[in-house]
Amino acid sequence: MNWLIWLSAGILLAIMEVFTPGFFIVGIGVSMAITALPSALGLPLWVQLLVFGVMVLAFFLLVRPLIMKLPRSQGVKTGTAAIIGKEGIVIETISLPEGGRVKVGGEEWKADSDEEIEKNTLVIVTGIQGVTLKVRRK
Image 1 (spheres, helix red, strand yellow):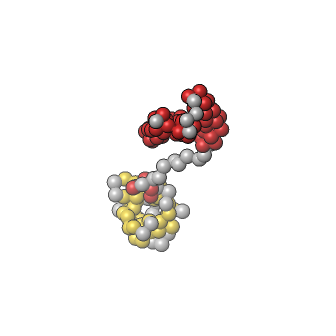
Image 2: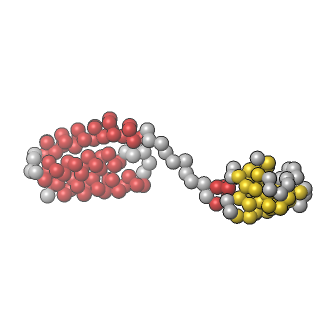
Image 3: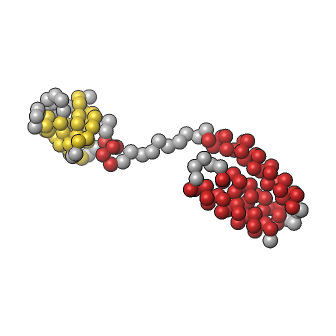
């Protein structure tokens, strides 16, 4: 029955890792889950504790450093932030001060620029103000 305690505690700690940063708690949880095996085989408590200690050390000395070296996602830009830096094409000449229209990623937008930009010119989105894109020549 002790094996069930080891396994349950290990699963609980692995689930708790979802709510904490640093990939720390899961190492203890996995070590506890692995320690359930010698417990299920009826080995004495000192053997179970030895297995647990060795597994925790192995995780923190070998596995965790490798995992922490993996590249982390910088996040996915969404909404209007995702359009900044994108390339578009002028579909209606951008004149000063009225502006014009551009097509970026299959969508048409009102656009402004610091200079007049003719139709069919490639542009880069440099910012957004309300529903108007700020663009410059590519």
